[in-house]
Image (cartoon, rainbow, N blue to C red; front, side, top):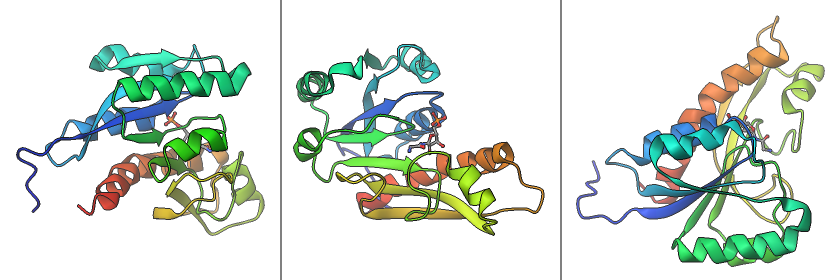
Length: 193
Ligand code: GAR
């Protein structure tokens, strides 16, 4: 087992737009001894994101931005990330697309989790599309973010079986439970742990 005594955790920001269940699982993971990351900042584009509650609960700073003026906002965020010495970004249900200008600044240091077996079902409504196509399997993917939607290098995937009577919501629930395990595993993986 790799010992991380004296190991300085990599400061990480998590970007969320909604419920934040992946954020919750990442925070839990970040507090374990084996985690190579600490979560130091939560960023959102949505003032009403449920996930923001994990800021107060865990004493993690949060910042919320209106993305209407995207370039301006992204530059503001870049500035804040620098101030917080953030070295890694985890997108966790973040529903805005980051511009090339932003991505270049964090090249190879932005991860995303997506609820399908990429390259299948990029974008939205993944579960409905998988069911409509009578897929036998679906799943989730953690990947590096590049300038094309849901297309960066895949780090890890987890497959789940689709049952005969599966519904959109039962499939979403089943996959989300796997996402919570997959994201921490993918982080260990990129640090070769
Ligand atoms: C998750 O299923 C995540 O994979 C998905 O949004 C959900 C967020 O849930 N992300 C995307 O669809 C990104 N394209 P959470 O807020 O409870 O973590």
